[in-house]
Structure formats: structure tokens, C-alpha cells
Amino acid sequence: MAGELATGHTDREGALADSCGRTVKSLRISVTDRCNLRCEYCLPRGLHAFERPDELLSFDDISCIVRVASRLGVNRVRITGGEPLVRAGVPDLIAQLKRETTVREVAMTTNGMLLERHVDQLAAAGLDRLTVSVDSLKPERFKAITCTGSLDDVWRGVRKAAAAGLRPLKINVLVLKGMNDDEIDAWVELTREHDLVVRLLELMPVGEGAAQNLAERYVDLTKVRQRLTQDYGLVSTSGLPGNGPARYWRIPGALGVVGFITPISDRYCDTCSRFRLTSTGELRPCLAYEVSVPLRDAARARDEALLEARFASAAALKPMGHAWSEGAITTIGMSRIGG
Ligand code: SAM
Image: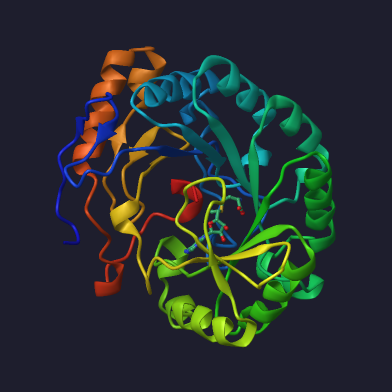
């Protein structure tokens, strides 16, 4: 039932769980709300109001929070933003998390613009996996969507990441009518010869994405998958690393796979094991609801017992499911929550 509250508790192994039996396994950490791109559905072009540097969690604060989270059963963290690579020293944060916490996996989501410059340091720091967001295969269109992006720069970064061993590499493609829906087949074709995980995303009514002119351009990717299954004979595939929201399919014999992230047309709330941490230390148990629990004061005091209690409160606030399909929206944008 959408919106109903669950109760936070720890199960027999000490893992944090809600009353639906969902254990919290993954934490997405936004290290900044700033971004070097201005995608229409994500960040308004004229926006200049960003968090002040003194309001951000320090790397030591983040490490302290992740240490507590991993004790409670979180085994995967993903560094995101905003654009994580616009914050100085992010490879140092990754090295610190690998050194000081017991999480099994540290991943990152990036727009790839600064990847070529940083990827060797990221790999050396121990980054396990990478997702790069690329909404078009056409350079002119990519620039129009992102305002300041260069597809060339992004692909150079992607190639260097693959060469540095960050495989399988995931590519996120947010699909919108009239923006890039005519490129879906080209992305599927790309997976024949390339060891890439191409993930097609539905627009969520979050921040800018909730604006009426964008909501009207939403594409139902369950229907798209049904059409692609007929056209390409896609077969369902499992066993990919990570435990995200995507469901995966493959053209028989292809090197890569195609993923579908369908929060609206085929939602996955019943298996959601994610929390999100904003750059200022608000812990959000669900992307769809404006509830959060503050962690910054406890993290700055290095009060691990208080952090554990705050995680339990957040688990208790985790709703069973979103209500986007019934018209609800999330007013705070993805770049602030951490996408
Ligand atoms: N800057 C990084 C990047 O571009 O990947 C990380 C942050 S970005 C907010 C993470 C992902 O969120 C991107 O793949 C982006 O397409 C997606 N995103 C942003 N707004 C969205 C929305 N309203 N609905 C669905 N996905 C969205």
C-alpha cells in the first residue's frame, strides 16, 4: 500500500530491516548538489542556489556514516550527486571508504565529462564499478540535451574506464519522447558488439522531471521492452553485479545487455533495499517521499550509537511504495537528493 509506514528493526544477523522484511543493503551518497551539465529534466539552467561548502559532509563524516551503515548490513555504496567528479578529491574519498569501512563494493554514477582526467585515480583508489549517464549517441543532440556537454569527452572517459578494468560498464539513458526515443534501437544494437550494460530509464516525477511539459513526454519502457523482445528476440538475463532496480535482457549472442528501469510502468518498491544520503547529511529512505532523518550533527560528533539510532528511524519511515502513479510528485530535484 503506497505511503504506509514500516517499522525499523534489526533482524537476527543485526541487519537493518523494515516491517516489510526489506533489509537495507545499499546507500547512495551525494557528495555535491552541483553539476557541470544542465539536463532539462534534472537541473534548471538558471539555477545558482547550491549548498554552501561548510554545509557539506566532509569525507571523514561520510566515512563515519558508512562505517555505521556497513555494521547495519549495508554492503554497497554508490557515490553520486549532482556530478560527483566536480567535488575535489573524490578518489581520496573512495580510497578512504575502502580502507576504513567494510562495505563490499564502492560504485559511482557520473556524467563522464571529467572521467578521462580522473579515471586512473578512481581505479587506483579501488572503485569497483561505474555508471555513466549518456542520453544520446549524437554529438549535436547530446550538447542540446546537456547544454554544456561534449559526447566526445564522455566517450574518451568511457573507453579509458574500460581499459582501466572498470567492467562491466553501465550506461544510463533517460528516455523522453521527442528528446531521444528515436535512438532506442541504436542503443540496443550497440550491445551486440560492445560489452556494455545499457540501461534505459523512465522519467520520474522528481524535481524538474515533475514539470507538466516533461511529464507529457514520459515513455512507458515496459511497452518498449515488449516491442524490442519481438524485434530482437531479447532473452531475460540475471546474475549481473549490483542489485539495482534494473531488469536485464540480451540479444542472443550479444556481448552486452540491455536493462530497463521502470519505476512507473513496472515498479520495484517491494525489493527496494536503498537509502540515499544527501550532500548535507539528510538520510532519505525513499526517493519518492520528502521524509528524511538528519545525520550531519551525529556524524560530526562521531557519535556512532546516535547514527545507528537515526538509521533505525529512517528504516521506520521507509514507505512500502511510491505514489507517483497516483499523481504524487517529489519536489526536491534529483541533483540534490543524489540520483
Ligand atoms: N551527474 C551524475 C550523472 O549524470 O549520472 C549523477 C547524478 S544524476 C542525477 C544520476 C541519474 O539520474 C542520471 O542518469 C540522470 O539521467 C537521472 N535522472 C535525473 N533526473 C531524473 C528524473 N527526473 N527521472 C529519472 N532519472 C533522472
